Image (cartoon, rainbow, N blue to C red):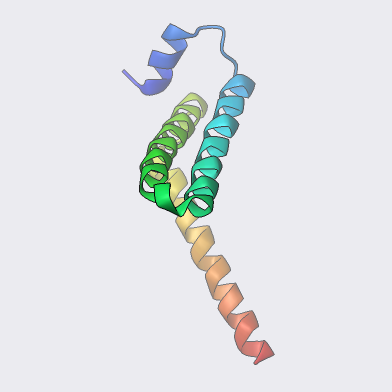
Length: 99
């Protein structure tokens, strides 16, 4: 069974918009951990661990969203990696033109 089906079974009334709100919450938790790790260096290790947990929650929610949409997660990740590579190439070309 997919994670999306598990979530749908547990929360049949949850909409995609609500799921995306959860994604936003999880992203906010990740940002908070990063900020606190920098702000309180004496507790950085603890906030980095908490940040890793927040990242796992965020990625899992994004996986559920992909499954709901019928998108293959590996294909979505590959597309993102291709787009990043293109942007980096473009950035490198722009930088070499300016120098």
